[in-house]
Length: 534
Image 1 (cartoon, rainbow, N blue to C red):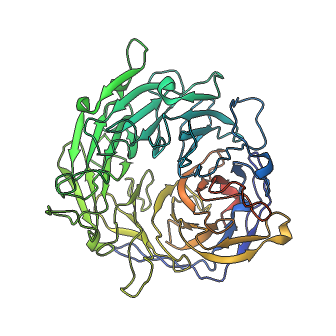
Image 2 (tube, one colour):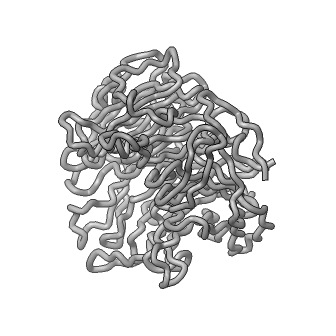
Image 3 (cartoon, helix red, strand yellow):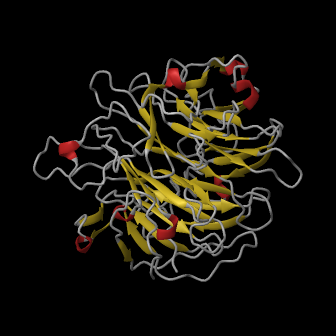
């Protein structure tokens, strides 16, 4: 199987592709969805096959790694170094919003700084989708606020032609916080505190509930403006016997101060508060906006509760099979899908959610669901995991993926792409960031001598029409954990979705100096035209 010629968006890295020995896994047909014909061995693409490397593409960057104090849109650099030990850059990724109003979708990448150095803070970087130039770096209050635990772009709220970026910081203060960062078309400070850049700051109202752990945006009330849904699934300090998790919805109109100043708002003033009904379920752990059904004008809200048993229980249970609930305009769910019917007990069904595209052609957006703790049988030492695409009205399974080539936790992240395979049909993308893959020799490409290894991680590209796996992306080295952050979007307007994958555990080579940086992290933009088979 061959690849289409690489489409270099900006930072062109050597294309390293190999045809793997594993056969594609056919879809599991359910609910009337036919399984397709296997397309043959999936193409394997390593990290050096990215069109952009959002960090530093040099294979030995440690001597030049430094924190950039100022970042400006022009002139665009050929590489961006954000090297700090334990930064975990690439842990969370969002794509699709036009943050600087230039007509091109942009990318946001978060990293959690776990360094114990003083004055260390979590950061969120916003990159232009046109050339990957950095636009701004948003900094948190400190390394414990978990700024960037969740990210989502919000369609232009204040009418300036730029989309906003919502950033969750569930560790901020006593109760968690969400910053709605105003987009900007004019150059400004390259590095700015979240408090200073915020159009609105939303504060949790109950300590320990993890307000801001998950985010999604969409028109949930049918007024034509994006609303913001915020998950508060609980934390280790929550009273598990009492708290099931909750989701708070803020209307888009309420997020803009009519006088133009930054808006401060408590969760007590949310327009809606949806509360889980199964204690310890972690209701609100994952969120997704799903387009309207045939009878509605407003989008629906999907909520994952990956530890739920689907009923009220007296105490926290790690054995919950998980569930996904779909809400319309009422607080009672339209649909409730429990993991025991899809993935079995202890599968963490609902750990990841995504929507935005129609796989089965019924005119209604479908829903992707991750169950990364699913086991094929009791003898499996590590959960294989699974990812599902289901009809958002009936719950019928359209695709099930539990790829045997990846050694664990498929479904940790999921995304629906407009088209990756090049057949004009939406596709499913899912990741297994702790997957261990065989070492592959890429030395003939003159870039990296070995790729893959233990916990290098991987991303699966799944044909939305047939359910066949047609491509696998995997990390450059062991413990890269590529796929921990995952997003898809057509950034260059060629009709093919780019895949943006974060490798939060990537470290510069340390062969000669053990003091070199580690767990720095990096993110890769795989151009859509690189990935589809001809």
